[in-house]
Length: 285
Image (cartoon, rainbow, N blue to C red; front, side, top):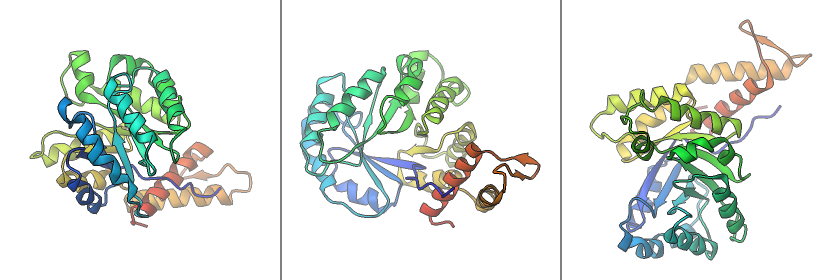
């Protein structure tokens, strides 16, 4: 079994759509993803301007391993439809589109069908941030073969639930998002940590969500990227263990090796291959 090559999505950082000058700076930070934001970062009066300023940025390509994404407005509103139509017309569309406030799998299917007319295949990154979206998370995750990640939107979710904006209060919806993402083989990316002064708190929350099954976490400032990367990048022990399990599986005559007293089956091997791919892409092998 060969190692699976994956796009790391340990982190991403937002760039406001009306600040195209920040796009190159964000790319220079070498994150896994850079997301131009046409939604929450823009006031209603700035939507058309942000669209005109930011969408041409995707014409410049580079083989740097960074996934270039745009967060559009909800496809259920006029601005979201305008975003989608503008992207379809681009000669060089983004690598991916982030869909906010998704409530049903049909939204994903419709957007995916519209993007079939784009100049290239577009990855979809789906934000689950409402009770309706959480109820349908598994169906949403499986709605398109172009889905690449589910993102957990804690602020809107906590407002709908009427609960505190902390890990314990949001443990259940976070778990539902991880479950849905894992079932469809998608990355699960957590909400940004909002307190820029609390580095220890950021690290602690990264560790908690990573243990829960999230594969990455968004950043709201460049200073957060090193902390996020440290938690979500495989360390030397994880790499050594992954290599040992993969070698044992590939060399087992009956295909069912036992490593450290535990039976190794194919799902475990796939997880180990993903660890190796991320480590390779992150340059830590």
